[in-house]
Image 1 (cartoon, rainbow, N blue to C red):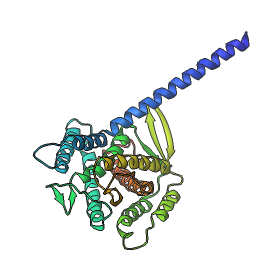
Image 2 (tube, one colour):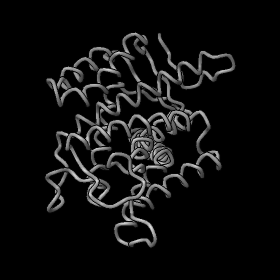
Image 3 (tube, rainbow, N blue to C red):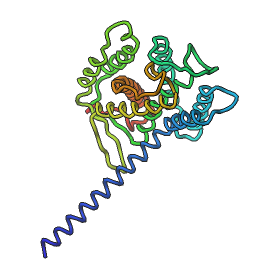
Length: 283
């Protein structure tokens, strides 16, 4: 009798645990989905404009209009703050500079017509980088992200700068992306990112979060190139999956994005009246 009761209690406890895990996973997925709103709109627009040709303007220009409207709506509806808009604008400029250089070097191209282009790069392309920043800012706020054992600024800033510059210099010098990746592991070996789901705080290694975000962006890149957002040289005739090695590029770009957001959050948190939520914990 006692053994039967014990088994019943164990089964009930297991069911409650599974229910709790499922609830937490669904809640986490919901917050992630809301954080991805801007990227989702971009991908939906890429698909829509590919399937249904829009009148009066080239497709790239319609994509720019959609991105501008979406950005205005997110701020107007308070889904994004003005501070987050500043960060996103910074990423737009960083991404646009990288796009102009990469187009010039023949890394990829924008073969379709567009009136609003700078040196062959449609302006909507900057929003694809900005959408990554939007996701990071949104997730940071919604999940109350915190950073534990974060390295000092004098280690973080030069590393982020070196990663970004390598996207340019590897065309003229050796590609040191793998050395930089190894250095990231060394610098952030003890660092962890914490996040809140339904009042429970979880954590994971910062390096793992970089890898996960980079991997999902690589998947998104395959979707984007399929719908003609841009084109790699080997996709000129027929679309083919983006080489898995591109994950390393996106991983490093995510690191730059994350580090810039983290530094800006830290600076704002140290300002008079700045919110400490989600700012760096050093202990």
